[in-house]
Length: 219
Image (cartoon, rainbow, N blue to C red; front, top):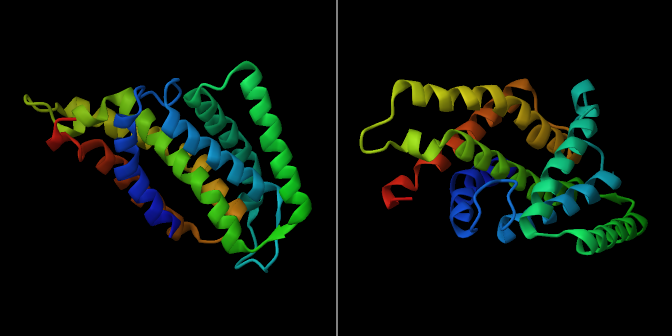
């Protein structure tokens, strides 16, 4: 289910939100909609991180799965910076927001020390969607992907297309492992190598679709 939600978010929702918010850079201020969603994702991921699992796991976590918390912490910082900047929380506002979020997470931890796997996956899903949207925004802003893959009237050169493909190939694997794979392994360790390779391929397709589908509308 998460894979299809991520596909729809990256290919459809992220490009639309990029047009609604006045600032299109993933770490720029003036992104109240995207920034709010990113902060919601942070809170859900932190709750998932501090609570245990009340039901037995589908499969035991492997070495990579057990080490997923490290990359997830890095992902939390990345998405947190994007969210905080996007909504414009600075100074006293930012401090107060951190205090409220920390108090809420501690209260949930004290009330529910363990949660069903289905709940943990639901809590982690907003973070995964936010992370996917950030990656799409990075690719779009760095490569001019919508212009290149969508084609200007004169057409895109082979070098332009190769640039976009190269950026996706170099950065998407590491990003996917840190901000998609690792959080999902924390929520529930599941899926083998082939399964995750297919999921990664679906993610790449969603990024490309998100870069080109608005072009017929002149965006």
